[in-house]
Length: 380
Image (cartoon, rainbow, N blue to C red; front, side, top):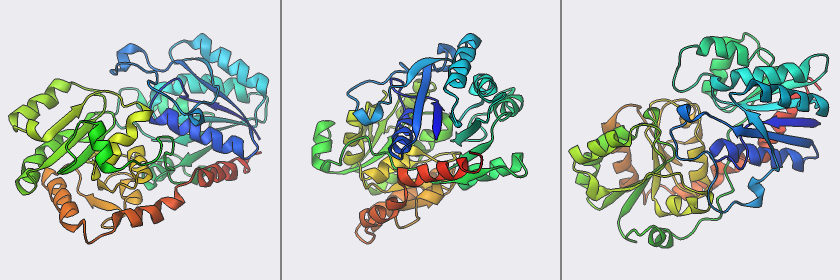
């Protein structure tokens, strides 16, 4: 098949760009002809609280797709330009990664140019069907975003349910979010801790990724006083860029007198440093208030690290309770504290790493690429 793949690609940063690069490579490796187009401007500064939208650090060649940097999310002229370029390529499939209604207008215009008078079909790979944080106009924008879509790939029960609630009989395939394998091999825990300036001794749990309200870092902080009563040598390694007011979190840490137990790296973590953070930790904690699925668990699985997650969205589909981690109640600091305590108390009784190695075999990019092909064969 000929596929135009339009989304976030290198040199833009983040998990979505990583996902797109790996799926691009998987599809290309199966003999398909792909052309990737990425954003010259993904978000206006008003909507992007981070320090930079571009990748930092050394990047593996696997991450690079030679994507054309053409699409400006707020410039309609660029939408038309990209639409005409896609039309001239005359692909069988236009593949978009979709996660937020902000992109609805440009996706709509590109799809219109690609499809009118052609047999080209449009497929969305859905991170979310509804955004994590609702905004005015989302209902109209969702209608616009899905107006020309022929089929969907979903990665969790939650997104599948949302899709089927909106459309009575959607065409879709379901495949789990694959493992991220671009961050290098695991390194020994003592070495990882030395690289971060941490003591080789003691307990370390990791909170990783962009910090937004729905991810529940404040809940983990509220759980920490109870945790350290039982494990006074425990440290929480917080690694990620704040997408809301960092001062609010620092104030909470001050109020709870938690600084002796906090290591805070409030920056985007480059790909070549990710292994240090995961390998320094005993486990990863995702105290989310809401979710569909999370690439953080897939990174943890890559490094054979168990995860403590809340029972929201698709997290409990990926983390097997008492086998590859723990699943606990959302929005409950005491439940998070109990799960962390259980992890350390039962660490010698459950072989988390062996369980993870078995479980992650099903999260391959080949499996995901097959799901894309299966869906596309319904129209091509």
